[in-house]
Image 1: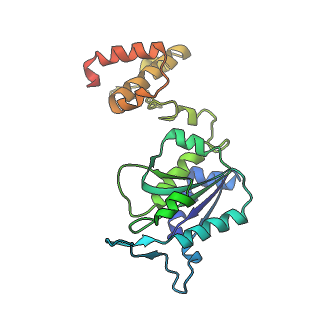
Image 2: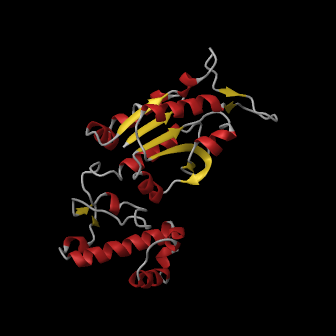
Image 3: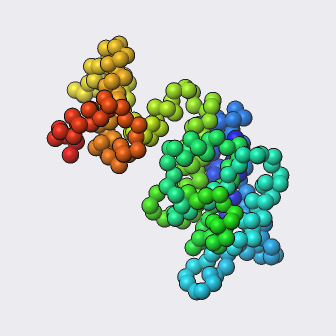
Length: 248
């Protein structure tokens, strides 16, 4: 996958993309990331990328020309048929695990990161294929959301994670939160690993993990259950859990 990022602060990406899983994906030629300063595509000698808003108001708005020119340059200098232009914006659609899986199917993603009071409306309406938000809050720019989305998408690419089973067991992948995980030591300061995980009975372990996943989702994110793929057994477990006091 090729990822292009348009930002006024390209240096912000050096740290997050220079370590861990994303770096390994780059080193293994699974992921190719390029960061471009769209100020380089401004028309005037001062490289101005923002201006005051029509109709009045506080702050400055990012001009359309540098962004349109930068995206067009990327499209002309890269040869990908399946590409998506993504605008990082607080008013965008919420980013989810399902969206990460969808975006992992593209050959190229182009991220537009803004600053100041936002973008000229023509960027969202015409240039971007969609706008995405990572939460109901406002950040100083689109760089952090882009980093988050790149990391989440990278995990979906074949060969990026050490195990092919890692991504499908993540929280949200199947609509539920992940079950608890345990490792050595078996006992620590009186706290013991659940006995079922030491039993060697894989059927019991799968059932326990499913129930724990349902329990945690019911307690922490009950809103997810409405869209989750639940079996009849899952529904019976939820009914039992809802009848217990510890879910409140």
